[in-house]
Image (cartoon, rainbow, N blue to C red; front, top):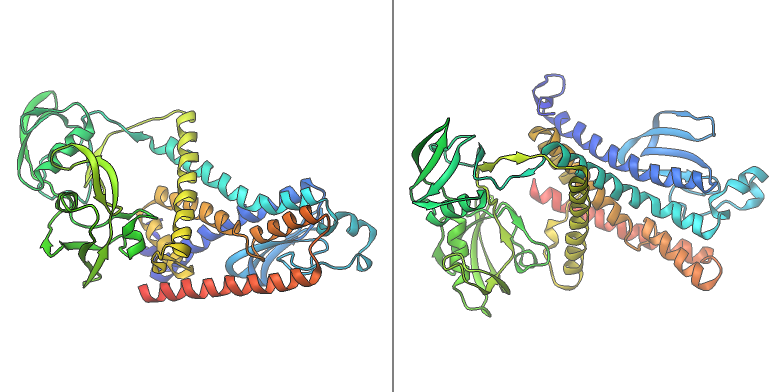
Length: 447
């Protein structure tokens, strides 16, 4: 993938567009195929299976009479079943206008359970795709080993670091270490000061000097925590805490740990070269003090940096059970953090500027493609979960809206009226369009 931008006929624009189309194409196909195949199992026939909207570019008709097509606008897709008035299944064609065979295979004539299963299958297939991809990644990459062995030195590490891949670390600053985490903790405690590290390299022991400091850059903002609600973003460089300069992430940890629990923290950051100041009210979290190691309630705002800081562990293979557990855990983790963020956005004043739209997805797709195949697959898995979850929001037009109507039908004993369906669909479409416009506006501001 990283070669795309180097090919003259492709160039930089297509190096973004092609990954974007691939990402959305895979995620949308799996989502719509979930609707299609479960509907088919339930005896509902699909008339059109479309990847994209608008004019048809290419397609064919299968032996069941379904038209499979690729359309001009690659921002989604749909399955139109027999009896549907439109691709969103928001309206129905009266039975009088259908043949007897069409009435039998029409979506709106299927049992309530069959319709609900067909609608729910799209998001469910998205979640299954995420689990499958995260499982495959775990099998391909393995997991970090706790052996005190250096697996590699990444680009984030200092250029003059004397550690090498394959070094077994025996001591740091005269203290024995027995795990990879202990190596990192000992080096991070020095916070840029040179420390002697006893290693075993090529069967012989030797001492090297290591000076390593993790930059004061936020790599991740935890959804639902104070930093997220205040507007701090991944990529921000923290330069001051309550007016005091900080030069490393450890300095941030120490500075915040010793502050009073119930006082706001003034945090000055550099964002795209521009200084901004945020007032963040921390929460109390039971954790180890970065200096004393004592576990007690400490002020916490919910930011983190890469623990490895360019010093990478060795990797070890995992079995299918462990990999599957990782696949499920990663998928559930994305769902949990997304739901938390949406809740904070609605009720706790979280920063809405983190919402991204098509432009942002295109940018990230291009970036991940440049980084390599595994990162690109990870993005597909992440977006598949996100799109599956978004489709379950109970807004008419989305799958969640249809399921909401079916729940009302189950409680009332009869379908929702045509007028209510019409008005609900119009309202849902308006909300979705407003959200898309807002997300695209955020994308433009980031350019």
